[in-house]
Length: 401
Image (cartoon, rainbow, N blue to C red):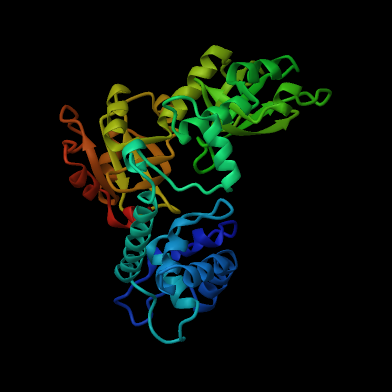
């Protein structure tokens, strides 16, 4: 059985179904899912990807299977989820295959993807070396191809400072033309309009890339001009795209990181403290397991585990803490992603429990770390080898990558 929520996007539904496919069964689909349902979700996705796939097949060395796998795996539309290999196997099975046969396995799909990657890497290596050295790989940590009209390239060439690369030049010009507003100025602009609550909403996936603010603004006031004209908000000098939802009431939310709170409905947050909270939240959005364990140990926690099965399209983490669960919960609430050695997985939920409750749930958890000085939890040291650490994470959770 697989439970699908009505509000989920087709990509999320397909990922959930893909995790439940059983290739050892004569009918590999979950018992409550029909092929017609799978085709419905796949045809919705096909409308988004078809033109791109057709272009890849017509104009590159990629086969149709390679093009489909590459596009479905690497392109994400309309805030949907990145498709897993199992979901892509369902797509290829439902689109353009006979009604008999089974969905393509993860092994087959990953092989198509690896073949596509090798072809694309060879093509990029050729393009990168058509000019004289130093080559892009020698100049940048993560070079990417960028196409512009030749006159634009000539204009950029004329704007280069001595010893400046094209990348440095473009970044400098973007910074010069950006109407950026510092976080402090953003909050002050709303305080000047009578706002009693300004918060960052972390409920959205990858919330740390586009900052979505929830702001109390009295009905008699309008958006401050400085905010209306800004194209970015800077935090410690780094510009972020942003969006603002203005409300006439100061409604607090569990996923909010308050930057200003003087409404009296909860703990007050001064602007200086709020800015520090936001910086901490941004630093916590994506962590390696070793960094997460260091934070937990500093907070007095004694164990960390991940559920054997994913929740939605991410990992369900459980933390054992002897006391002050609310403080630990607030500290971990911004955690959005776990970085492993070869992939990044989403964090769907974090539950803070007592050591006794942690031990009682042990059968459904995979313990990643446990302190030796707490007799209520198993002693599990964190390995130094990143591959060994990744292998502790249950395979169904790894496949949500």
